[in-house]
Image (cartoon, rainbow, N blue to C red; front, side):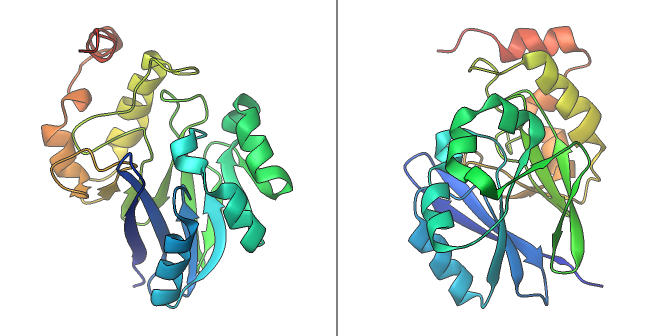
Length: 219
């Protein structure tokens, strides 16, 4: 059985993770959240003998998208983003231009002969989404190993974040590997079963208690 291929690249001053995602045995890969160092991304693609066939944007924040213009100047690629994020972010529309391919909840992205699922997970932004590729979940700024994304920025919603975590991501099987958007945890990748056990943001029984904790004053 084919298994997903994931290569994690730590780039930039904010401990961002950029990903190459595809299927083992296929040269095709998506780049998830192309930012900071397009040349380093291209070197990783070449080292692995892969071919870029698209870009997947987890959300519109610049630390996840600041390489898009350069990438698209050098490669003719579709850019997949959640439809709500395209509507929310003029910056994203300008960066990706005609390459944008808006996705609805549950839409798929074809890579290497398989369809990867886009999971709409609002909360950090209205159109945040995660990429579920077999037993790998690339989560952007929705879920980290020991935390979750901020909800106090423009477009953020702690109520939506609670629903995204409790009704979408907590339904992902325990064996699924979580690949977050930043290196904020003790490890760079972990099984969802372990994340479920140790991440405090996944332990709240109701939205009110989650919101009170997530929106407590920042030190």
